[in-house]
Amino acid sequence: MKRFLVAASIVTGLAFGAPAMAQTKPTISIIVKDTTSAYWQTVLAGARKAGQDLGVEITELGAQSESDVAGQISILEKAVASNPAAIIIAPAQFTPLGKPIDEAAKKVKIIGIDSAADTKALTSFLATDAVQAGRIAADVLADAITKTYADTEGDVAIISASPGAASPDQSAKGFREQVAKKYRALNVLPDKVADAQEATGLNIMKDLTAADRDLRGVFVSNIIMADGASQVVYNKSSGDRINYVVFGSNDKLVKSLQDGTIDALIVQDPFRMGYDSIQAAVKKLQGGTPEKVQNLPPLVVTKENLNDPAVQKQLKPDLDKYLK
Image (cartoon, rainbow, N blue to C red; front, side, top):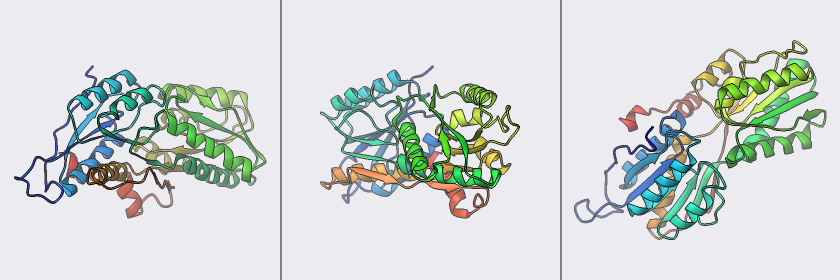
């Protein structure tokens, strides 16, 4: 399997105000976790739009699986060797990408997006405020449990992907903090952390519902595992309905939201993430100082607001406009 994909570059506009013929446009490389994913394609679409608006060339890079950490490190090293003006990277895992980013930052400005890495060398970091997303998820899940059971009691579970990825851990942290602060009658079970596979999410839920008749709600911080977990609609021990809140979205989860299997999605804005990361890089290249940390607000999507134009635009941006 190919380790990475380089999409066509974008060359448009002026290079920081100078005529296009007068100088070579700066190139910014953006490295995502999985070029086959709709989420990461949306990030790339935002980056392309920023390239068009700001007059820079965008080189798109990435592995074809979020678990291909070695592949991403290799891609980063090759990107540095190509001598771009800046590199945007979404670290596949927190610890393994730390030192490679440290080394890369000695030669080029590095901006991180989506998930953190074990490094202090980033010029700027842009991501959804995962801790706040977890807090919001706790409020939304508690409300859903109250509507289903007429009280806010019982057990709730957190299903997360591997701790090598920083963002899911932070959303789980925010969830636990909010429950402890506001919902003392809810008991948060020990986190279920595993590989980001649909079958794993399904098996975790089968085990939970077979063993715990008091399980009433689940927060899933990984969309792939949520696809599997949400197939278990009722508690096997009690026969009661399970309430679900998921951090992230895809077409399958939106359908589950529409049919009432999932109560809410806490969604990110990958298009804005891609756009704003290029904007931050350009600001640095022009001698400015981008914010060190830029937190993008999460959006709560429910069955009630799903068809709002603003929600639909964030869930389904017009990728064909930028990716073809």
